[in-house]
Length: 102
Image 1 (cartoon, rainbow, N blue to C red):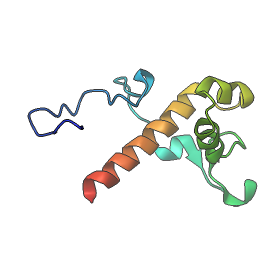
Image 2: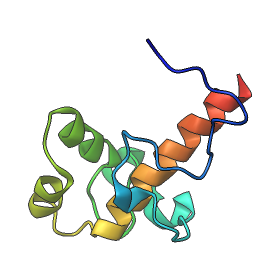
Image 3: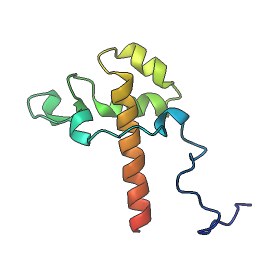
Image 4: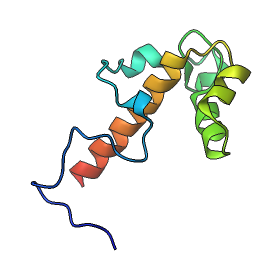
């Protein structure tokens, strides 16, 4: 049974249990344009990590397939840990914002 959440029990500053601590540090999240770039001349406009030719979708595919972030970073050394974490934080924030607006 799920616990009931209300304004008193919901701590919006708490780390959700499904997010790693590294995504919830008090560091500023970068702007999407600093993390992901889309250019028709690079892979036909597929969104890639800035400064690389690595599609953002590849990160999600690795994680969905059960690989760790470290495995992804090992396979794609041109993507920094900071870029990958920022992309995940931006995706998280986007999903949470959509859920709140519904």
